[in-house]
Amino acid sequence: MVNGSLLVLAGICASAQTITIDYTKQTHPQSHFWAYFGYDEPNFTYMRDGKKLLSELAALSPVPVYVRCHNLLTTGDGTPALKWGSTNAYTEDAAGNPIYNWRIADSIFDTYVHRGMKPLAEIGFMPEALSVHPVPYRHHWHPGTTYDTIFTGWAYPPKSYEKWAALVGEWVRHCVQRYGAKEVATWRWEVWNEPDIPYWKGTEEEYFKLYDYAAFAVKKALPEAQVGGPATTGPRGRNSSRWLREFLGHCAAAKVPLDFISFHAKGSPKFIDGHVRMNMAPQLADVTNGFAIVRASAFSRLPIYITECDPEGCAACGMTTNPENAYRNGTMYSSYTAASFARIAAIADSMQVNLAAAMSWAFEFEGQRYFDGFRDLATNGIDKPVLNVFRMFGLMRGNRIPVDSAFVTADAHAMYILVWNYTDDDLPGPSKTMDIQLTDLPGKKIKLTQYRIDEAHSNSYEAWKKMGSPQNPTPHQYQTLEAAGLLQRPEPPKALTTPHITVSLPAHAVALLKLEWASAAP
Image: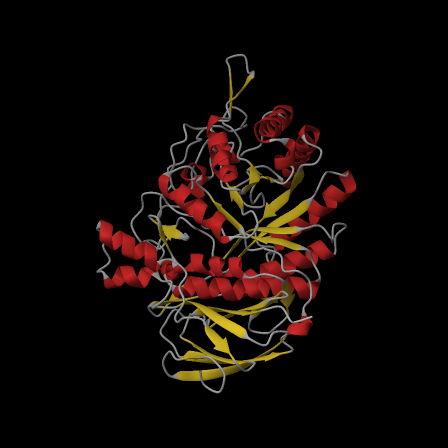
């Protein structure tokens, strides 16, 4: 204790910042907009490390976590591969009659529901028997090859929109029968993914038709179901912003069911002078432009789901082929996530839109090398530093308190302060001193607990490198890495005797300060 404040030393501090937080300035209850995760490869869901990670995601959140994945209607035998997956939900007999098979799709949703999670069910992609251009269908993309080779027969319109609608309706009805109408009414159904680029090989008008048939089919099967779209790419671009605007106009004019609006937002890192330089500006531009388009539409108060919200675009492109993605293993990814999510929440507040979700398109890649630079939350069952940002978010409760350079919530018995030392360049840098001034706290005896992500805490990657970067860790090494991947405290909880905290954060570090007090005497 120094002058009644907590002083956390971590090197020579080259910069300082004063943050003032007034407990009485609480606004709206903080939504758990961060509790959304997604991935391309649905068959990883029920595999060993997939189930382990899903259990951890469910455990870290005080509300049900929503999960979205591609390829839920794609034809195939369920064999997973990068940027590929399948369920074989729909085939046809020789006479062209539909054959529905929900075995693999059920395995996916069962894994979620068993853990108290919710599907954000992406309605796609096109089954081989329905595609107007089915050959070639199964792609064999791998990192380092041309990305556009993934766009095969699954990306085309249906040969019969009536059969497409029947498939969607049958899927929803099956889910109602298996899980109950009350449960399925809490899910979200999103029609397709990024139809403004070659994920959809039809026209814009054909996507609107695809959406219309699907949305009406969902509602016919379960009127209480929530359906939305269009899941377009980042609306900072001219084409993607036009798509989003015209889709909303179409839904308003045609009176098509629309319960939520979705689009994506991505940053753009580069590899410059031997290191990664992040670029958050494009992602925030996507968010701002998307919010503005929604505000100007007939659906200005609908929930907004950013169903992919990430530092860049390709989760399955590792650092071996894409050196700009080397940031994903360590604290650059975690500090970027803390800073960007706080900024997105602030933009939503300032623009007065209904932000429901900012989904991290990151999960795990079964059977890949340890720490190979994929955009994932865990590698071979070992949690990466970024996962601990979501553990921090999961500890926060209460109402938002708008504060520059921090993400703050409070309830009757506690205050939660998330701070970070983010810089664009993935290089060693100066630590930052944060002088936090607190006003009007209702409690007297205050306990302060700090959680930290930095090189020495909550960081399995640094622990792995200190072991010599083993690709076949021993059982003891694996247990050590598991422990290193958990959220850690740099010191025991302390009493705070004055409303003043001084924290020094190393470059790319994130800290959560939790202040707790007993109820005031009546």
